[in-house]
Structures are given as structure tokens and as C-alpha cells.
Image (cartoon, rainbow, N blue to C red; front, side, top):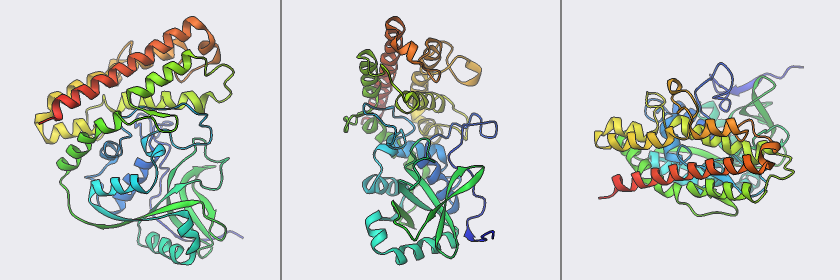
Length: 363
């Protein structure tokens, strides 16, 4: 018998496939948490103000290279929000946009399950999704070990809750609420105060140096340090006999390419938060141009697509060290040396971004 959904939000879309396939080509929306926040803000009436590109600036995802020295085949999303996921990080993001929120840990959720499932159902009935953080309970499904997704409805009278992640051409995956629920939940609250967009952008830009200089955490590196640690590990033979090139190498290429593209596109609605700030406050116009030039150097081959001919990303592709990475290339000492040089060039670009920000944001 086909089960009828008793409640789900309207206009659910695949939040995590942007940038893939013809439908979402060139959107580059590759950060799951930022996609979740954009959809949540849309449902809270903040769509025009807090779009994906503004949110990536707030979260730190949009400017920060990452690299995990550990085997990361079952870790998390490969970005700032994935590695820092938790109560403190969520608190920072909601404070930055002026909203209250309630963070419920998995332990608290399962200890008071009827209360929180009722609250979850009430939110989706009102058209407000709920952010979930953690393991979905179905590890085989998550290609990139999703950390953040959204609860968007329920069926079977609270026995099954629906969350937004595309599987088998369906926009939902399901979790049996009768069993242990292995996620923390984040319920958006009331708006504490209205913050002007220019102030949101300025505050987020002021925090970029923080993201770019975060110290190593349990083998995870951020900013220029990420590219240097990665280069060191390649040079030392980390990938000799590697069996998970996607999870332990290519995901960081995806991060590099995403940063290069997003921060070199200046036309709305795809403007990076630095560029958006420069549109709202022209005092930052020159800073925006200087930063875009550095990310331009990380780019691809065709200036018409917003990338730099002969840029670092394209050079890595040509060497067999990009999305097309192979063990043959990484284990060839001459090719490997050239790949390592490109990552160290990328680190210098991020060093330059940090210096540009520090010169322009002081005083």
C-alpha cells in the first residue's frame, strides 16, 4: 500500500546537487550547510537579503581552503562548516544574521523524543525546515559524508521523518523516528534584531582573516596552511597506494575550484561577499578587485568563463593532479614535484588575500 505523506514543505528541491549536471551548471553551490541556510532563510522571508553567496561569506566556507591529513572517507563535509560543525559554530552563524535558535543534541533529543518530534512536526507544518547535523544513519547513501541537511516533513503520523537529500531521483530520504535518531537538531527562532545587509557583509569580511589563520585541528588545516600541508604530504608519499583518491584528494580539488570560481565572479546573484560589500560600500571596491585577482590565479583556462588561462587549477588538470588525479601522476617523481609546486603557489595566493584584507580592514 502506498503511504501518503501527511506533511511536507512545498517546493522542496535537491539542495546538494548545485553545480552538477545541466540544470545547475555553473552555479557552484557546493556547500551543504550554506544551501540549508539559504533554504531556511527563504522560508523565513529573508531570501533577497540572505542568499547563498552572502551565507558562504558568513560561514567561512566561501574563502577558506581546507585539507585533512587523516583518512577522511567517513568524516564530514570538506569545508569549514563540516569540520567545525556543532553548537558553538551554529551559534556564531545565527548571531551573525540576528536570529535566535535552539540547539538540541542527539542525546537530549532521544531522551525527550516525543517533545522534540512534536516540535519538529510543528515547524514543518508551519513551513519552516529544521537543520539536522550528524550522521543520517544510512552511511552507504552519503557519497560525501553529509554533515548538514534539513528535515522538511513527516509521514506515517510521526513514525518517519523526511529530510532533503536526493536519492534514486527522489528529493527525500527517510529516517525511522521510532529508532535512535543520530542527529543534533537546530530550530530557528525569532529575529532578535534586524541587521542591515551592509553590516552583515562587513562583519563577515572582517572575520575572513580569522578563518584563513585558524590553527590546525586534529590533522585538519585551513587557509594557506592547507595547501602547504597538502603539498608536504604529497611530497612525502602520502598517496602511495591510496585507494580513496576521491575522498582523500579530489574533494580538496573541488574546494579549490569552488573558491577560485566563486570569488572571481562579480555579477549578482553570484557575487562573493567581498564583492557584495564593495557594491554596498564603495570604500572596499579596490580591495575587492585585488582579492578577485588572487582567486583568478587559482582558476581554469578560459577568461570568458571567469577563469585564468594557465591558472593553478588548469595546470593541475594538465598535470593529472586535478579532478582527473591518478596514482600514476602522484607517484611519478617529476610530475609530483610540479603538482607540489602548484599547491605552494596556491598557498601564496591565499597569503596575498590575507595581506590585502589586513591592509584594508585595519583602522
